[in-house]
Image (cartoon, rainbow, N blue to C red; front, side):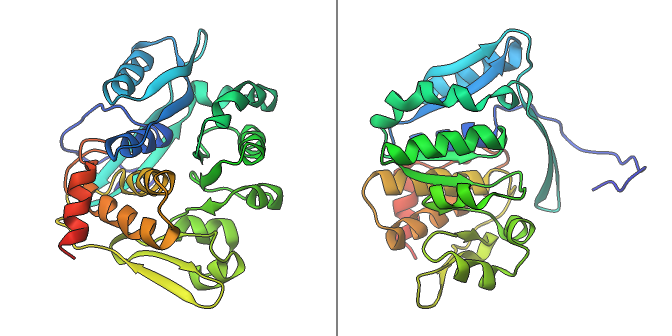
Length: 274
């Protein structure tokens, strides 16, 4: 990785459809979930690229709006030594106003699981979570990019899914301390170690799966999409977490966020071989 003021020579450059919400939608769809994507794109080639890609993954894009004067969000990802660093320019997705949330109530009436990320404004996310909760959705918040979260939002969500770094940024505590504060709610992803949470009595470590790591980009998004798909299918948390870990382990074995996202058959095969 370059340090401040440094220029380094890189390798191959690629442009791929992405975004946390889109990645999680693709992961869930490939695992058999019926997925609807809500978002905004700019009136530019990237907007068409990401929308067409979602449609190719059999995702409902009826609620993706085109901002005439906005640009489509872009994430610039540097990959080195099997790890990554990301800078997000959120574009049109950062233009949401809280009052726009109400128009999606009818969508949530038909929804089992609502998955949220922080590449959109926090006030809008809180309003969406409130409506989702009122309509009895299971609400998953993937708090990335990490930022301080109001207790009112934490109260609205059923699950919050930071990685270790995000957990420490948000809660200012170790993983062990933080999960104890939010039993059966705070699910912390820990890379190859798997995931950790507190069940109200003790710390629970849900083991990860061995993987031939090529690129970790999108592993967290795969985990969240798989968790959502598993919960939507009626699985309980103790069953859904190994499913999500298995999916994430498969995703890191290919380069790119969406390319390596597995099918349900692949995940079940890895679960069966453990």
